[in-house]
Structure formats: C-alpha cells, structure tokens
Image (tube, rainbow, N blue to C red; front, side):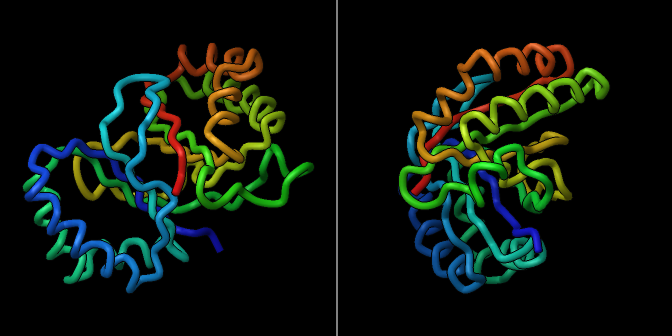
Length: 206
C-alpha cells in the first residue's frame, strides 16, 4: 500500500509564537505514527524560490496522513503555526509504481543524511513533459534515486499547491545535487523547462 506524506514549507515570522506549534504538533503526529523525513535543515534552491523551513512527514497511508492533519490535537497546535508563519502544507499519496533504479537498489535511502529533491510543478505542455519524464529516468537510475512521491492524489490544506508534486530520495545530499547537475538530468530539464514551471529544492533528511 502506498504511504501518505505531508510536504510543508514555511517562513516563520514569530519565533516565540511558533514554539507552541512545535510542542503540540509532535505528540499529535506521533499518535498517528508519523515519521519525520525532513525537519528544518538548510534547503538549496535549485529552481524558483525556497522558504526557510521545510518538513516532510511520512504516514502509513494517505488516509492516516489526512486524519492526523484534521485531528483535534493537531488542529489545536496548527492554529499557532498559521498565526506565526507563512507557507504551504500539502498532503499527498506516495508513489508505488515502477522505479528507474529498481535494478540496482530495492528501496529508498532512509535515515539521517538522506538527500531529497522536493519538487512543486505545474505542467502546461503535457506532450513535452512526457519527454522529460522519459529522460529524467536515465539520471535517476544512474544516481540511484527513488521516487517517494510522484504525482498522486493530494490535498492542499494550506497556502498554494502546485498540480504535480515529486519527492525523490538519494543516499545523501551530495548525490542529490550531483544528479541534478549531471549532464543526464540537465538534458531532461531542457524538456521540463519548456513544459512546466517549478520550484525545486535539495535538502538533507533527519
């Protein structure tokens, strides 16, 4: 079964006001079995603009991710986040389809130091975008990346959401950056640049 994820980005403008959110959110997330993959860290903006704080939380499935967000315990904490920061919060179903690197690895990198691409995309030329999808698989396979999220049903519960969202895991941040800057990925990016607008960051996991 595909897992569920929160993908969140924000700029905190009231540090003291944000602290009650942290205190209340952590036990609420834990009660639903949530696990932090990314929590803060320093994002590297590869395309578009990055917000200063980025969070990815994994749940056992999409319904659990939604239930946690809408629970009274989390909503009580979330009011403090809304009041003290600006940003976006997306809940999305994980990807359970074919993986370009499945011939060399059996699953996503995990744990502290894992590198991630977090991608927010709006596609305006689907035919050209299909060429990107085919080409980017070459780079992902070479650098042993794993699609954790790749499209999928989603709900933008706060702020603005792009129509397509992607999360790719690599063994570390250096590999994530090397893949993005590789000739193979840059060849793929030439297609996406014509077909879509995007914000992309690379960031280390926890």
